[in-house]
Amino acid sequence: MVCWCSSPSDQAQSPEDIPPIDPRVVYDLELHSRRVADNLDSIMQSLSNKLYKVLFYLTDYYSILLTTIKL
Image (cartoon, rainbow, N blue to C red; front, side):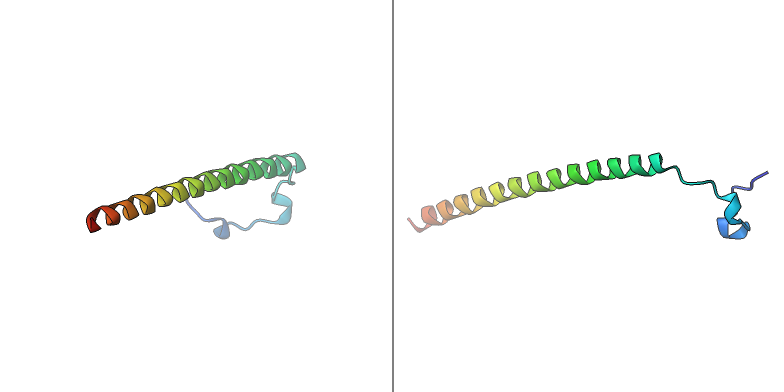
């Protein structure tokens, strides 16, 4: 019976108790990690472009506002 309330350090495990690592699982994990990283990169690039456009419009509106106030 395994006690889930204790930490792994409380239970003595030998290297034989650890199952072998399946290379297919590692490969799948790597593929999913790359997809997540690519999607995150695309999201960050899109956000950067949108923020640049917002900044452009804000500075344009601000210069119009200053021009209007001076008149």
